[in-house]
Length: 302
Image (cartoon, rainbow, N blue to C red; front, side, top):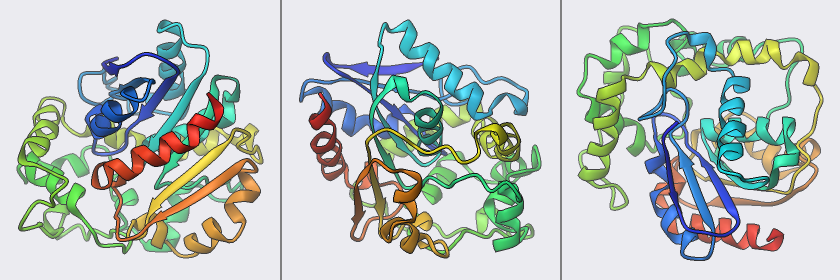
């Protein structure tokens, strides 16, 4: 497992999403280490310079949590502050549910906690809501999304994902493919060509299969989590989401987040922040504000 680490003091573990790397936390690593924290951001299993098992069934949340518990054990750390975004947020919810003894507090971004529906799998639910063209459904068939991505330059794929500001659920007709997603003519001020090239360089080496395998394990996670149906998240939590984030604009999401639904399943939810004008990749788009939000929350638990 490859990690980026800087600073000394209480440990913060940062978990990235798709299609990303430890690098997504570059701003937070610098700002929070300067405030007296030991900041640790791994490339998760299947990404960057971390090992990528070939078997797509080796990317369940239990595998990922095994990696992370092993990581903090190897670093001699008993408890961490946990910070997650996108897929990293989903992993973070499971981490707090299954090993709350290792977590001091959680700051999670973009992806809300969804209790397990015992009657319908995650992918089936996505299909029922949005159809076969919904990106999560399109990612299920091994090799299919990879073939689609191979039609484009890797830097262009990264640019499409990171600069998207369309809050509607992404549905990708097969005949159009991901190359049909709009290209941003100019990079936003928070993203440089060097940033794009760093991501592209790593994904050129590894391909996208490792990251896509997380989606391919969604229903396997659902099966394996049956015994944990109904468990709550019992650590202190702050949740942050961008106003233009796809996740915040899903049917029913805003009411669930702001009107008590999330709090019911996350009883120690203490703060919800909706960042005005921000989209999905808020840790990069609004780095100073996000770092301040993290610090303001975790300093209560030092």
